[in-house]
Length: 252
Image (cartoon, rainbow, N blue to C red; front, top):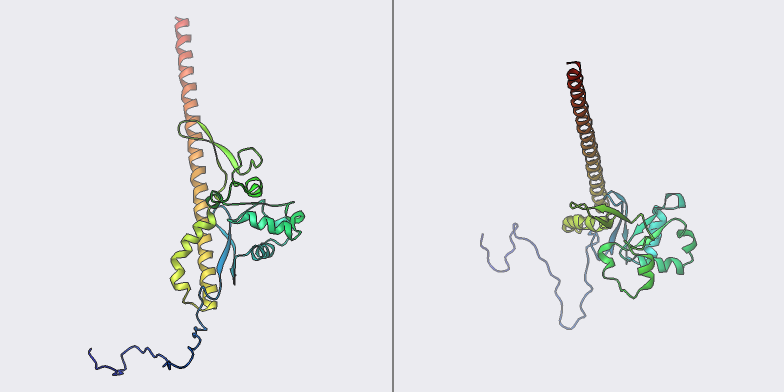
């Protein structure tokens, strides 16, 4: 369809602009009140298990500060009995300093150790003694035997490897990034519902994969046991046949 200049037709998209006189100050920009975007909340913080199951999530309004992280952890883990042995954060050394400065070190040191994930640890300064001593995700001096285990490669040689996946949250963030465009256009209520639902289905899918993996491992183990028992039976039968032949020769 063609239309003349300044002609307002019902099917045309409206783009009304406020007229700004040259001698008047510019009005304040009007932001839609029903849109949820980065200008409203700083980020979404998640807590994941190493397998990828989401434990909790929260919206941080202004910043990902150490005080907000500590408050989030206290909310998810209110008592010593439910706190994990290790908490992996990209800024674990800064959170640890904040905990010590706020006088909570005696409480957290009894149950939990804060470590930096392997991806961000390589960018931390080597001169940071506190980070290198207390927040190393894979110390090779034997100070954290639960974080580093011995494994064997295909050639049979033993090597050290990390016992847990410290990139679970980073991998989750990469997956959630695919929904960023639609999440920014949602109302706060729809945002909360959609994000919580997607994280629920994500965790459900991860648990399903873990169960299938355990079932395959158990099946493979049973197959190996059956093969071993079968070979032992054949060996025993052959030995019995040899004994029969020997006894037959003796009889002759």
